[in-house]
Image 1 (cartoon, rainbow, N blue to C red):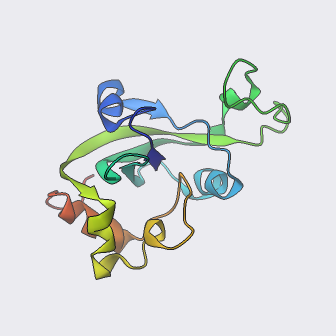
Image 2: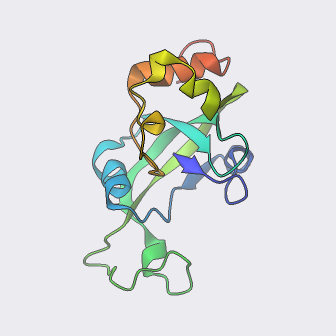
Length: 152
């Protein structure tokens, strides 16, 4: 899951402990949250639009997909006039902080690791804010970040 540090940084999730992941307005990312993300699934929390982009920590899904209420709030920057209670269009999940990386894992470092070549984030044209990560890639990124064992 990608967030810009000036919008919602890892440190804020640690302080808040949990948050809802709202404002996703891409159907493929929405479908991932709605159909694939389950309570207990681990998440790499990625900072984009910074130098260098990097994985800052590991979070866990603590509430499965449900309607994104910001889509129906006219005062929200994520308002969608086509979203209704009957057809909410957009979904979100809740996540909770698990552990910060001992060392951030930068995008250049991930690109330099041939074992991560199947990671969607590193593939050309992949700019989704929410995307699946193969289990082996998740484990490698955690190891690169100085985490011993898979966080649970």
